[in-house]
Structures are given as C-alpha cells and as structure tokens.
Length: 238
Image (cartoon, rainbow, N blue to C red; front, side, top):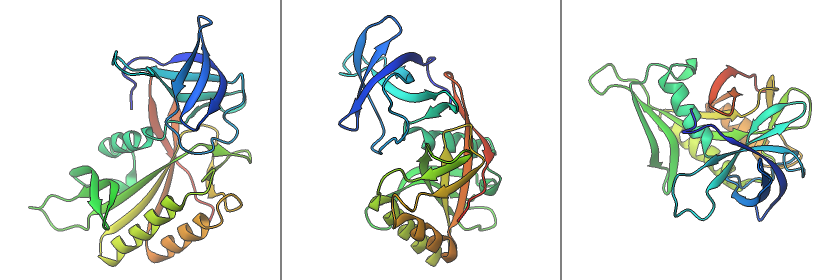
C-alpha cells in the first residue's frame, strides 16, 4: 500500500477524545489532526513522540492531516491507522504475498454476511472452474507491544471483535473457509499473542474459533513514510 504523497513529520502534543490529537508541525505550527484509531493506543501517545501524517487534498475537510504512524526510539515506525490493514491485506493478497490465500481470482470487499455484519475481504474461485470453498477474511490491526518481540491484540476491551469471531465460526458451519488475519503494523515483532489481561473474553474466543476451524494468520509489515507492505508471517502463541 503506497501513500498518495509522502507523509509529513511532526511531534505529538497530546491525543484526546480518541479521534483527535494536537501536534507540532515541522515549521513549528501547532494544529489538530484526525486519529483514525478507536483503541487505547497504549505506549504510543507519549507527548513529544515523533509522528507521521498524511494530508488530504480535499479543501473542504475540517482536519486535513491524518495520523498514520508513530516513531518509537526502539521500535521504529508503528502504523496506527486502523483503516490501512484492509488495504495492506488486499494488496498483499493480490500480489500473492499471503501463501494461505493464493489461488482465488475473485476478491470482494465489505460483503454483507451473518445478518448485519460485513466481512473485510471475500475470496472466491472462478465460477466456471472447479469449485473451491470461498474464504471469508476478517482483518484486525495490531500495534500493541509490551514484551520485546511480541505483538498483542487487543489493547482495550472489544466486544465487537468477539462478535466477528462468532460470525466466522458460522462460516465454517456453512462449509466455507473462515480466516482471522492479524496485520501487525510494526517491524520489531517476531510472534503474536492475545492480551488476555486486557480483554478476558477475546483470547478465549479466538482459541475457541481456531478449534472450530477458523484459520488464524498473522503477518508483520515493513513501514516507510512512502508505503506499508506486508513483510513476513509471525507465529501465533495461543
């Protein structure tokens, strides 16, 4: 996934009301930017931390700058925009970078399923070819880290994410593939696990989903101010 223009660097003053942050730009100007992340962003919001932002070309937009990455002394760039993993995942699947999800010529996004839910990506085989079960892929952004090398999800309680796992189990019951894909927008992690002390429901729900047949995949990313691309598979520590 390439950014339309290179990101702009600034310094975080504070993050507040979940979706807002005040920053100091490179020229010393202070401004408010949009934060596309509803989570706690633990360890990523210390005042003075360098940040990287995209700028919207829309002159009518109230907040033209969007927070994309935080730069940490020991970890480097960390992606915090929760909208990006879907784009990263779509690009990686199209390029054949996720071995488990190759061989599907048809890719659709935001397909309605399980009542009022929408799946992030639906992969389907060619209807004229030999039938292959469709793959329903739910994607989650991961940027939380406490133990060196270990990525964790979630960083706050998330009943919605548990609901998604139950929906994926019902996909298995319908004889299709169900995939929970975690995209770690960090370069310093070598494994993935659930933060059971933060959300006591999600970890058990993920393990139950896996035992039900839901495939759990996790990939890290390589980040620069110009682009984010899927890098390598990480093992899951249940």
